[in-house]
Structure formats: C-alpha cells, structure tokens
Length: 239
Image (cartoon, rainbow, N blue to C red; front, side):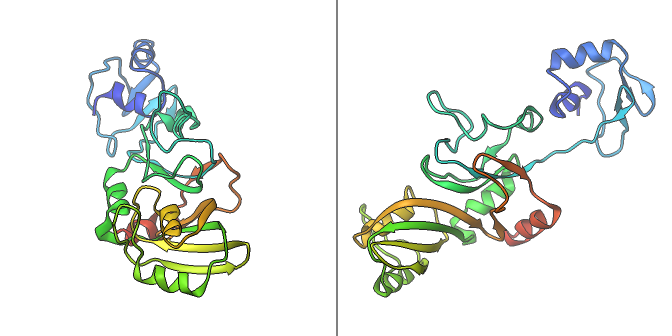
C-alpha cells in the first residue's frame, strides 16, 4: 500500500495534507525518515510513525448505531441527512456503509462497516440471519396472527413471506410485539401486519443475528463493536 494512502485512510489528512507532512519529515518508516508519498509499505510488517506516534493500521471498521427516526440508511442523499453524515471524521475516513436498510421512521440497531463480505453474508436471504424488531401495533394482536406469521403471510404484491416468529408482549387497543424475520423486503414488517389487517405505529430493530442493540446507546449515538460481539457476529454469518 502506498504510504500516502495508508496515512490518509488512517485519518491523518487528505492526500495533499499527507504529502505536506511527509515533506516536513514528520513520517518515519521502520525508524527511517520517509518523504516520498509513493513509498510502498506493508501495514502488517512495517512500522510507520507520525511525529513519533505509531500508526495503528486498520482495514475494517464495525460500528453499532442506535438509528433515530429522522436519518436515511444510506451513504449519501441529496435531501436528507444520512447515518454516515453524523459519523466522526476519524470513522468517516473508512468509507463505511450501513448493512441493510432501516426505513427513515424506523429506529434502532444499525450496523455500519466497510467490510463488504460480512455485510453481504448478513443480508443474504440464503444465510437466514434473523432480524428482531420491537413494534407498537394499532389493534389487538392475537394468537391467530402468531399462527399466520409462523407460516408466512402474503403481502400486497402477492409475495408470500418466509415464516416469522411473532411474540405478543401486550395485546390491546395498542399491542406491543417482537417479531423475528430472516428476510428484508421493502417495508416488510409494516406490510406483514397490513396483511392481517393491522398497522405498525412504532418500529425499532433490537437485534441482528447475535448482535443486540446496546441499551446504553441513545438515539443517534454509536460505538465500535466489542471483540466478543464481532467474533460472534462473524461466526454467526458463516465467515
């Protein structure tokens, strides 16, 4: 990897700013001053320091966000603020992206990474990775609904969903439920309840595979995954 790319990727500035830093003699490779941005280094084998501080190279970043209901699950949008827009600069430089999508008005667990292989496996229907949602439903959710969801329901476009695991937490004029599904069709949770004559009035994703939303994260906050969370997530996705 070129030295200027490594330093830029690690947040030491733009390519132009990194070149200025190199020319000033602030960068050393294996203890020797290096001024050429074109110098190739092995991040796993070579020691790179900036003004005496060791550069810790990382290829991937894994972030858990508690997405609020006013952000778009995208890397960029011409009109709305995206989940990437609120990242700190040191995280933004990794060019991460959201894994899957949450509707704009849906809150909760969103994984953000630049690991394309992991993202693909977590969102592939063939992997049957469960996504669990908490929802408030307008109307009384019944055991008949639980049975219907366990067999899959037919959406408004004729698609018959895979079975979903519906748990009723409270049943009344407004019901509270948890639902685990293994696919992610457009507005799927909302459309599944519409298929049984009910309406979702609040929706929050609380789990994805083995990864559970950290209850200490306020809306709009995020943190890096712990090593344990990442290990479980990777093993659960079949990597």
